[in-house]
Image (cartoon, rainbow, N blue to C red):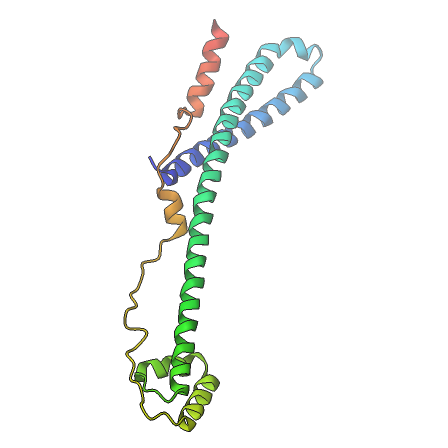
Length: 197
């Protein structure tokens, strides 16, 4: 099981237990009102109050167990997600720096009066038209007897496949197994079985 699958599974469990916990809290409050309004209500509704309290505690404990696991799982997910984002930002900054270096190299070559591929000139013009104009003007003034001819600086580039950080975080394998999945009904049934003994 990967982290994404575990997130979906335990998120569903948390919702079920949270809903049941709320229902039981409402029932406890309603019963408390009955107890307060009824003479000798504490004695009359004692069994029901105990049963509700035990049910609430069992559901609350299981919810807490799932919540703690989900918190650890989300820390791991966040860590991987942030790692991927940082990695992509670092790569983007490096690519931007490489692009800047190439553009400035093309400008320098043009300023020396050398011949560069038309595609490289176009990249320089798209990057900064003022720098392009300045390089062309300086290059026209350069009295270079031997003009060097260069190959394109952009030919060796290849498109890299970008990794979706959310997908990377979801697809990592689980290091620890989570708590056993138990339905709310099973948890409540275990409480009822304990009371009958």
